[in-house]
Image (tube, rainbow, N blue to C red):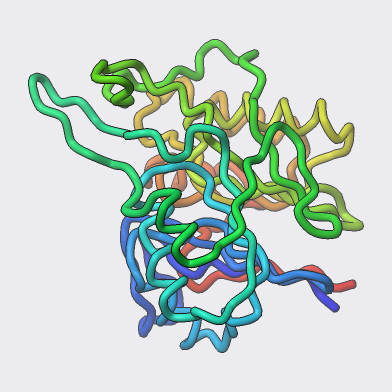
Length: 278
């Protein structure tokens, strides 16, 4: 059976003009042994897209949420309540349920989840916390706790946490990526890459000691300057990544530059699928 990775929702449309888009991200991963949702967008729109794309989400046995921002976890409630009989395990990073905000001068705007651990207990949803490198299904790994070796990759200071009545910098220690093993090399799926996409890829290389064949998802280059964007895309090439599908928070200038700079890049928009035979 082929391994298929379908972008159920993303900021932009592809050829299928009947699909919904939103500022968010959701992948469906189908392997011979498992069906996995990686992120759930910000609303229930990814569910309707799945139906239009002929994807049966009742078969899902794992849900991985990359971090606790609304545009990656906002559709989770809708999934649970649309498929109440579904038997799946939820995987998140440590600190996923902490209060996440964006600070703008004197104001704070909540960016976090619309559910908590009480909701999981109410709906009898098994929940596992990813510690560093954990195989959640055959050949599918969740990874967190990323090395900080690329010092140019900094987190915008507007991202903060509300803990015990105090405001502290959000270091996104809850962020999780997904790694799929394939005959061609590792396939890496990222949600927003707040800890830095190069930091995250360096960690994957250290943990797996294999080449990265494909990189899909959000790289959060939307706030990076031109020098950092060009350097990051150059390093993607030097890492010999053969399939590059950045999207969502990567920012259109980065996506356009990646497309011009590399024959391996495609804009991984809503409805796109990466299919690996065998």
